[in-house]
Each structure stands twice: as C-alpha cells, then as structure tokens.
Image (cartoon, rainbow over all chains, first blue to last red; front, side):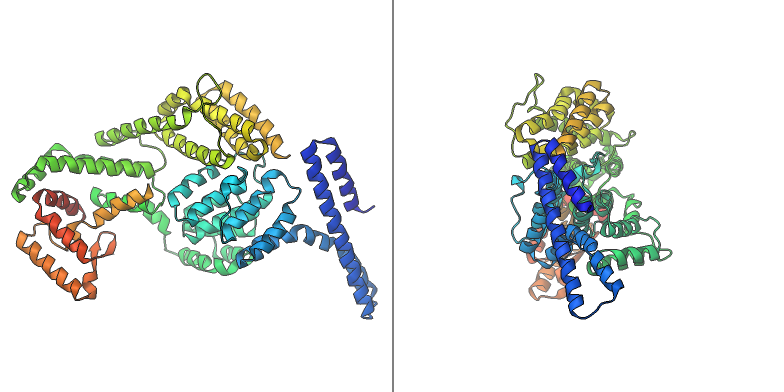
Length: 487
Length: 90
C-alpha cells in the first residue's frame, strides 16, 4: 500500500481521537497531502506519456521517471514556502508569496499558521499589517521588532527583542521559524551592521542562511573562523548577492594581525572622564550595547573631578572670568554630569560592580529607587488579594508590555540580588505568576505561545528567588500551556 | 529616550569652544574677532568653514551656531560651564 495513503489514514484516525481543533488541523493536512499526491502522480504520468510520445523507450529512463513522483511530492510539500520566503518576497511578489504561504501553513498549529503571513507582510508588503490584531506568537514577536527597526526606532526594537535571550526549551519555536523567521530577523541586524545583535539572533536559528550569518558574526566578535569555512558558508547560503559584502568585510578582518573592531571598542576605555563621557553618550545615542560597569567606572572617574578641591579651583577660575555666581555654575555642572550619567545607566546593561566610589554609589541608589518605583506600573494591576485589577488588552499589546516588564526586571536585577528579592516580595511574584494566567483566560489560543514564555520565565525566576510555591505553579501552568500550543 | 541621549551628545559637540575653534584662555577680543571671521567665511561659502573638529570627528557648522556660541561665551557664567566641559575634551 502507498505509504502516503497510510499517513493519510493515520492523520484521519488521530483527528478522530483528539479535540475539534486538532481534528480540523489533521483533516486539512490530510487533504493537502492528498492534493499533493494526486498532483505528483498526475505530473509523473504526464511526464512518462510525453517521453513515450517522443519515442523514447529506454526502460531505465522510464522507470526513473515513474519513480519521480516521490521527488515531486517532496517539492510540493516544501516548495511553496521556500519559494515565498526566498524568491517571491525579496522580489516584491507579495500577493503571490502570501497565497503560497497561506497554502503552505494551512493545517499547522495556530502559532505557526497566521504568524508567518504577518511577518512576511511586515517584511515586504507596501503597508505593514496591523500587528496588534495578530496572535501573540513567535512570528509576530519578530515582526514587531522588525517593524520598529523599519520605523527607525532602535530603542523600541531593542526593548521588543529582549525576549530572544530567554526562550525556554520545549520546541516553542518550530523549525520553519528557526529557518526562515530567524534568518530574516538576523539579516535585518546584519544590514544595520550590528553584528553583536546578529550573533544574539542567530542563536535561535538553523539552516544555511543562519549558519553563514553566525560565522560572519563570530568573526566580528573576534572568534576564530577559517576563511575557507566562511567561503563555504557563503557559497551554500541563500541571498549570496547581499551576503557578498558581509563575507568580504569578515574576510578582511580575518587577515593576520588585525583585531576586530568590536573587541577594540570594548577594551579601550579612556582614562579622561570627559572623553569617556562623550564616547559613552555616543554609544548610547547610537543604540549600541553599553556595559553598566563601564558607566560605573566613569562615575568613579568623575568623583575626583567633582571633588571639593577641584571645584574650589574652578570657582577661582570663575572669579577671574567675572562670573556672577561661580558656585551656582559648579552645582549646575555636577547636576548635568549626574543627569547624563543617569541617562547612560538607563541605556546600559549588565551588572553593577560591587566596589565603587561615593558618586557611583549615589548614582546606583538613584537608579535602584527609580527602578523599584517603575515596577509599580506593572505590579499594581495584580493585587495581593489575587486576580487582576485592570482590563486585559489585545494579546500583542499584552505581549509588548510584558517584554518591557521583563526588560525592566532585568534592570532591577542589575542592582543586586537583595534589590530583586525586595521587588519579588513586593508584588513582582504575583505579577510574574498571574499575568499569563489572565492573558490565557482572556484570549485563549491567541495567547498560548506568549503564555508559555511567560510561565517559563516566572518559574525560572521563582526558582532563583527560592519561591517554591510560584515555581511549582508556573511549571505546571507551562506544561498545560505547552500542550495547548499544539492544538 | 535614544533621541534624548542624542540631544545630550549634540549639546556637547556644539560646545562654543569647538564651534569657534578657540583656545580656552581666549580673550573677549579674540572671541569677537574669531566670530566675525567665521561668519564672513560662512557667508562667502568657504568650504573649510562649514565644518569644525570635535573629539568625535568633524561636524557641520552654520552661522546660527556661530552666533549662538558667541552669545554663550559673552556671558561669564555660561562661559565658565562651557570651559569646564571643553578643557577635558580639548
């Protein structure tokens, strides 16, 4: 019996045993396979007839042709999606591409059915779709970041991409998303020349395109990659025309004796606080990654320049110039330095060093206060008596807000374990645990993927905080949501 | 927020001492002379006057920037603040 007919029957049987949505999906998939099978057999017999009509009677050729239906079946299964992402989209054939994608994604789990169309349109359609009407799924999460980048909002894009470092294991990202979705995601960062971000994004991906970008990013990060490996990765990758300049730039970096630019930038803090201050402002204004400990070191360097003795010297200079209120000017300068350091701290990531100057400690205390205060924006919605005290918005709105919350919590964490423990017991635990519960209650299948990520994070965070109750609850909720995700 | 940081950076790069390419100990006469010279060069569209050096590379200079820089440095209090920032970057 034909193996595909067996598969068809299995799908029908599986559908009968499961719930309505699974049955519907399996029926659609079985129907699609039947269409593919009929098309493959028809095309094969057409080919055989044509060859026979042309007078060719070689038995070997004819038997090879007769067996070609299997190849055709595979092509019909994988081809439409490949064609849409690799050829039609980049060439601007958006309607045809969307049509093929709609056919290719029919019958898949919800998270991988509507999302690819949203991402495809965000990338190539003249008008970006209303992403807030979409499901809170992984494709939409990527589309939101690319949309922010396209609108020239790097800060917002950075915040929206914060989730990519914290995707829990458990097949939450399908192989199609890891191949097509992550590749376009990483390519966008590569076009902006942000190779650190490319390295971050490709960690989630797979496939030839992702492999090439991973190698180029590795070169820019100062890792050892051979020129031959880079050439091979480029030759096998899709989008070779665009990738040529990235390959050449990476090959130029590989040349002996040269040091990657990114590594150089990170290891050369200036000893002069003025110049370092300007450099860090430049880094932050450009949206490049900025390490928090570098800002702390800058604050340490300012400590001396803003000390009493230096200020007194400067007040003397003020009197020479005929300044009316030199002490007031000196106070203003200190205020300006502190507010600019606050802006740098806001943009920076990472941990704060333990031993710092008085000025850096003051900066840290200000930051800690602001961050703890800022958490109330999210925690007030989830009161201690349980439940939720605010309306649950559209799934994608809730997702973007949760990503901002997630980002904020990591900032709180950079202030130290004690600060985070305080925050955890002051409302953070209930917010982390209850948010996905209410999101799922309000939006069901449109929010299963987002809820999975949120539960996993809450469980991980509760384990870190030593809160067994929340950890158990979140892990159990994650398992349930994970099962629902496949419906 | 990123726009806010861009503004902070732009303010530093538009320090009047950079815009006017003046030494920190420049006298009032030097200041006026340099301002008038730059305004004349900009009016004559001399290419060299259209940019000025900063610690982060050359930036565009306009006559409005020159006038604003002159006004800032004429005020001793404002000059004290600009001099403090510029001396570390000069």
